[in-house]
Amino acid sequence: TQLLEQSPQFLSIQEGENLTVYCNSSSVFSSLQWYRQEPGEGPVLLVTVVTGGEVKKLKRLTFQFGDARKDSSLHITAAQPGDTGLYLCAGLPSSNYKLTFGKGTLLTVNP
Amino acid sequence: DADVTQTPRNRITKTGKRIMLECSQTKGHDRMYWYRQDPGLGLRLIYYSFDVKDINKGEISDGYSVSRQAQAKFSLSLESAIPNQTALYFCATGTRTEAFFGQGTRLTVV
Figure (tube, rainbow over the protein chains, first blue to last red):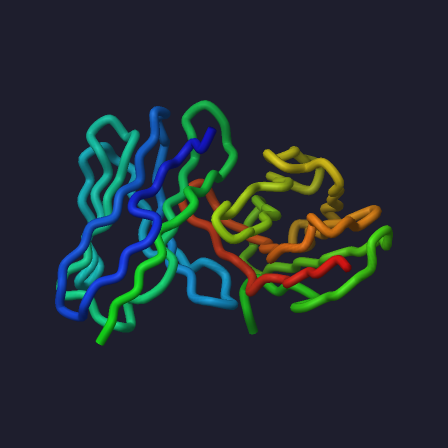
């Protein structure tokens, strides 16, 4: 059973479109993190959300942590080809200290 | 210099051989992790350590062992490599709210 479910698994869009990817769980997390990974490289941290209902913005990226701290979303406005990559959510469940990852959303932004 | 350094970057080994993957970090964090990444399966936790005297199994520890030689060094060993251990391996360090990854070791077992 996957503790963190990400959707969609694959997403291919045109430059300029908006998109949202989701990270859901039935468990409560003390924090959730979003990473971006490019081929041949390790994941790079984009943001950490800690408080239920928290919204963080990073340029065209908006991250939200659910009120119950069980889910999160990543919204990208006016996507660009440079946004292409694998987006991973990860978190520390409140019940243990294992940093757990979802399977990721592979985003392709076409010029 | 990278904050988290993994060696080697690529390795091809034969079935049954013992192999060690090394990781060192300059972030000064106590927590260190080993993950493997397979297509369609995401990052799966092999082992994690919260300090030099603390070693914990992750979700897929069978066939692997680790050693935390110092706060900055955490190595992963495959005692007798098998083909289904072919994968991309990542070491990470961090705190409760962030993790920093190495560039990965691509391991192929033939």
